[in-house]
Image 1 (tube, rainbow, N blue to C red):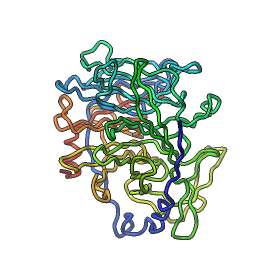
Image 2 (cartoon, one colour):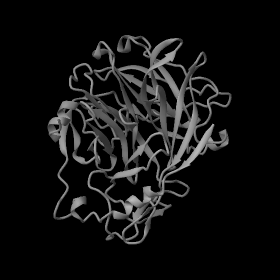
Image 3 (cartoon, rainbow, N blue to C red):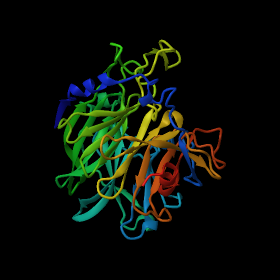
Length: 434
């Protein structure tokens, strides 16, 4: 069953106090934005290739599963779109390739796996089981893969346990699914003893939540609810700004993560910025806590180039200084008590914004990832971070998508993507975080 909610009108009113990017708060001439710090990586996964020979595998979003007793047996699970899933070891070696098979429904088609997160302790066949939860765009649903407790020591780390005939998340019928405005970004969370997934819709401002269910036929979901986020924004100059997209497409959200301590959703609207949204959906007012640098710049869509360009190249921006569209992956690093950090990948300039998890989520700076014997990380989409030791990453692990993958082992003539591993301690030192 579905229930559609409307975002509180005050979500738009919060934007009426915006100031141009030339002002001090946005890093203008008198207060330029500080240069991003730099951290390095020497570890990356094998290249994936988005062509027929490579199985149309295009890396997108990672998740980290931490082994409860032997952290060196932990896993990184990553989506490869039409190429399915990849499972990597702590050393970034490939352990398993999972094909994007047809969804278990009468009208199921081969999948396109977009985002992934980990749900711990679901009841599968009467046993607590950790599960990789995946959004499937071509079937507009969620797919579920049980994680073998042996982790990296297992012959087959992932096994699909999706229940049959699950409902579409955003579409009324299969014909509508074919338009591909379907399940996109994804994160899982727990509330009042239940496990939920939050899923964004491709090409739309809509967010959905669903309660996960378990039974003899596998893992499914129910109680799907929707929230329409803002798609247009009033500006101080009296105009209304609508982010430029191709016709029929809205300013979509993708990267999402939930603060498990407070039940707060952090969601990146790619061409707008970073939102903080209370859960359950509709229980409070969404707040835009940071904006992309060109927020408020009126663009026009050119159908010949399939791109947007400013109507007035000299027009001021009302944006922030940390995120350059697209704002993409989001994850949370947890510290003691209620402390921690929200991380957002700024795909447009190959950096990552860091925000406090408490208070008004003030900006704590940004960083980029340079290669040491491997290529620099570019065009990052999905990210994942763990505060627990993961093998040699004693203070935690950050995994980030890299596109294009241009390292020495990649074929420069093919569309290559991959994932890079970063010591979390390097990030804390570079930004002088606690």
